[in-house]
Length: 563
Image (cartoon, rainbow, N blue to C red; front, side, top):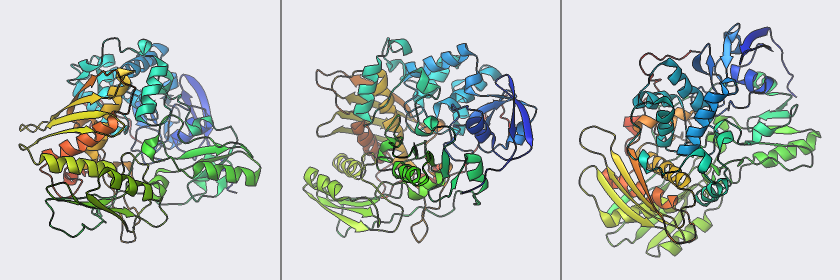
């Protein structure tokens, strides 16, 4: 058992009240673990790269996870709990009205960043997008967040397509049952929506952990009496981005192919790291408290480990993965290689690493869907893979078949209409333009009864964002032994707000039972983006353009308190 260290007292003001904590921890751990500010979230644990722990120090935004608490001695710290109630409610209402928060894990930090932008002057829409470079949101595709910022800050015209949010789509008029129904249809996992979710009260596993629980901080760490003690007792080198190039581990099948595709290792990048807690002989807290993590946590080992440790010790135990644990041990999309003939027949190879989940059901599904394809599993060295990740394998294959049928179009444009068995349909048209702009997507969705248009639109925007990243930029490097060497969030290649094309979503009401519609959006966007890029043989197609190190781009006149 690791001992709980102490430190010199550090006095500061928190949300207007004087407080004192012992030195030796980050500001995030002082606020969250010892002063009870659970609106702050630990998403990068700690790399200073996700923005989930953003607070104000003397009125300026600052990420708390890489700020030693001694740096705020004698200063004023404001968390989301300390914002004026009217200001907090205005942001929460705008985010709910626009569907700008889904799981809600990243949202409190984003609100703090955008609210500071408003305090500094009269920002533009581009200022809001620039401020969001300090954050990671995996769910929403950014556009709805920018729309909410424009609503609250009066930051110029919102993105084109924002008027597609149906009339009456306000926070107060959204039916919570219909919101959750549509969210679960798209997820699929339970997900609630409302002001509390925006403000950090979505019931995430670690937010509900009992006081005094023992802590395992890391997949293989020793138990400690607190997070403070766990960090003090763990000596490690902070994970970094590598210079190792991406690999495409599955070799193409032999044949004379009209179209080929190879994919790399892709991190699902759910923002809340795996977490659970359990009392002896109790039920473990679910790591899927308010969302499905794109399938990445369906078989998370955290709940079983929490139960095992609680039963061994006879005490409540928290299990918390660091971001590096998620990258090293969490499942990835199975890399694949596809070869297609003009008639749509061909071969597909999916990579599986030793110890990964079985891919048999996925292979059987592909064979049933596409009998003209020879589908096989091949063993590769690398991190674990899982078939539960969003559209794993079948989405890439379906997109490739649609691209094969469509062929390349005019330069910089792509279009795909996809209907999925037992689910909905989507048509996506992408025009990248020829003026160096970000381009524009038009998305039409048919998903039965819409239930809640704001929710369905929000999920469609998120599907577009994730699909564009998969084609254009996302991937992590592994070494010769198959171990991931890109361990920080900024190395994943996820598109930021300023990298996204403008998206117009049109929802088509049908007199049919609600079905999943945004998986079709996901696949259609994969195909349209690939066609627009000219169907190169490997994804991601634009890695060099987005691989540059993170730059904290701030609007003029706005600065951030530095650690």
